[in-house]
Length: 378
Image (tube, rainbow, N blue to C red; front, side, top):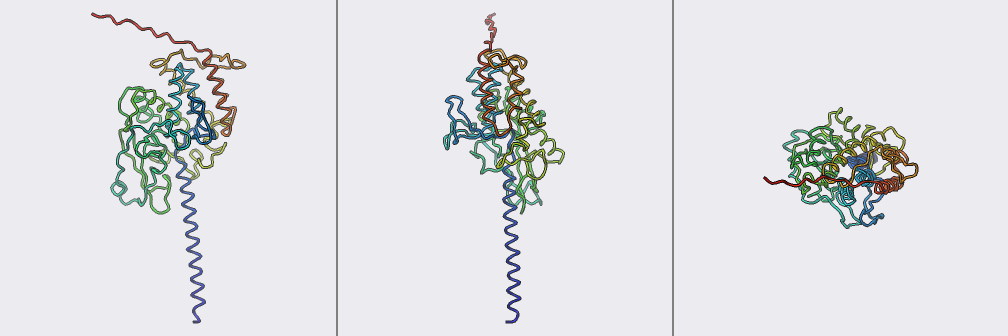
């Protein structure tokens, strides 16, 4: 009996240690899950809900959107010479690359998850060998809105291809050629990651794996829907280019956001801030210069496509004054105002400014005269 107090004390010490261990382990999981959730946002969703361009309907039950991918795409498409209907199509399908499905509540009004499909996942026992691979870290299938068809999802195996693309022939170049109809095939790569105990993010993963794959999708090569997908990925390259360069320097097989202390990639979509890596893409931050560069490149692509294919009006030069706006700022100056006048937390002002630019463009653009030569027989 005299040893009982010692045994009880020892039991209490072990219990406290176990409790401390479980609490620490739980906290590690929570932190890691937050890190996992912050993997793929580019020009990030802002505190602004989708506004149906056909009905004007919006509200708290609609998805949040990016004013770059959504509102500004419409204004730029109009300026590039596309019809109103084609400009709306470009706007919606650009945003869908992120949103996958858009609609109020559980209703699906627009989706690009049509006809898509994924290949069976690789066997981690074969591709990881002796590296820890107890559980799947990436893709995050539970976050894909339709895990059978949403190929552009930020949480699927093609996420780094569409959302963290390198500006090279294999990635941006391949999407460009498919979007222009220069090839019928969209050859990409899949990304997978597995980990052992305590590994819950791509950065932590012991086993990361990529493989080449031809994307299965009902999106038609050369269509406006495909072109909208391309300009989204092009914008994402600019948004993520510093993070991509950093991840390349670290030897990562693909780029990803992380909360692991790399400023160029630090971003938490559960707690976005006006001064985080994506918040700084607006207002007076140096980071906003990549937003300026993205807009210029996107507009060049839109004007090239409009002139060559679907355009109904002559593109407006970036140096052209928009006379319907007070002070007649040039189109380029209106883009500068859009980017640099309001911070991340004021997307409503950006949307209102994009609306003003769109109205000014519609008031002064000139119909394009396409010469149609008669077909002369032999």
